[in-house]
Length: 296
Image (tube, rainbow, N blue to C red; front, side, top):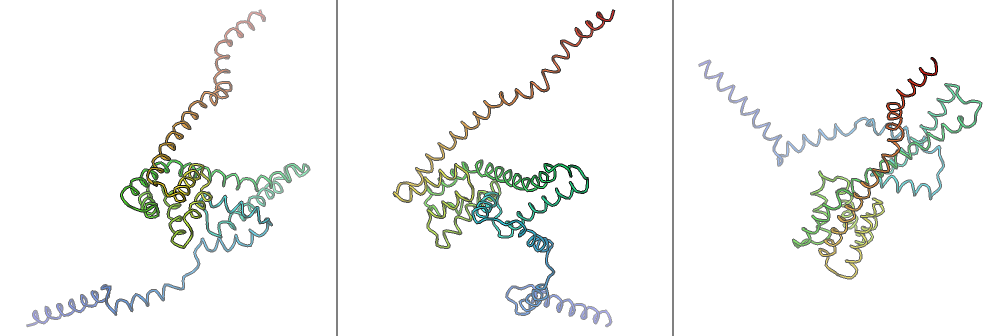
C-alpha cells in the first residue's frame, strides 16, 4: 500500500511539473508569454556597457579640435569608406587624434627631450595628430582591396540572377546574401543599396551613393554602366557580362603591372644587402693580403 501511494505521488508531481514546463515553453501559451514579458521587464534596466561608457568619455574630448564643415564632411566620407558609418565613429576618431597628440606632448615633457627645440615640442604632438589619419587611410585601402577582389564574383552571380528572371534589385539583394561569408564588405554595401531603394530613393541615386561609400574605381564604372542601362533600357545581363569581362581583363593587366614592378623594387634590397656582402667576400681576402704585405 505504501509503495502504491509513493508511485501515485511521484506520478502526480511529474505530471504537474511536465504540464507547467510545457505551458511555459509553448509559444502560444498565455502563461509563457506573461513570464517572458516579466523577464524582459526585469532585464530592461541594465548597466551601460563598456562600449557605451567609452563613448561617453570620448564625446567631450572630440570637441577639443574645431573642424570646418568641409573637413568634417571629408572625414565622414573617409570613415564611410573604411566601414564606419555610425555618428559616434566620427567623435571617436577625433577623440583618438586628440589623445594621441596629448600623449605625444606628455612624452616630450616627461622625458625632457627637445624642450629647447620647437621642432620636437610641436613635431611630436603633430605626429600624434597625423598617425590616426594614416591608420584610417590604411584601413580604407585594405577595405577597397577586399571589395575589388569580390567584385568579379558578385558580377557573375548578378548575371546569373538576372538571366534567371530576377530584377536588378532582387539580384543585388540575393547576391548580397550569398556573399555575406565570402566577401562581407561587398555584401554589406549591396544590403545598404537595397535598404536605400526600399526607403524610396531612386536607383541611380542609391548606386551613386554606393560608389561614394566605397571609393573604388571598379564600383564607379559599374555604377555608370547600371545607370546608363537603366536610363536607355538596354539588357542588364549583357551589360554586366561585358563589364565583367573587361573587369577581369583589367585585373589581369593590374597583376602583370605589379609583377613587372618587382624587379625595380628588388634593386634597393640588392644594393643595400647583397652587393656589400659580395664586395666583402670578393675583395676582403685581397685587402687583408695587401695589408699584411704593406706591414712587412
